Image (tube, rainbow, N blue to C red):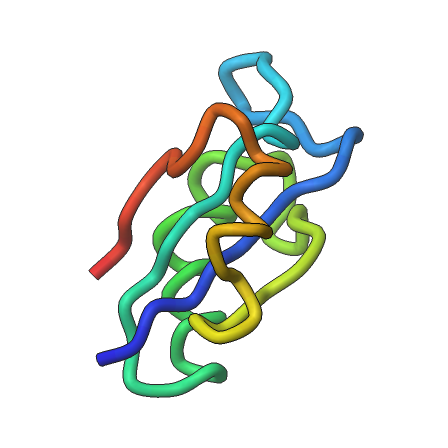
Length: 80
């Protein structure tokens, strides 16, 4: 299983009323495509205003420690 990371933009708000741009959501999955399906099913369809409310999807190699500095509140959720 690999880690995939999903990030948010300035206009992406959690249903509870706070901005998500300082967080990422990590998904453990066997493929890029399956990670996106899990993320939509278990996160955006539940916690966001629409299932397409996120900015970018990254794999482990793309989302390294340098990338994490741009999301100061860190990991919001792990989906396995």
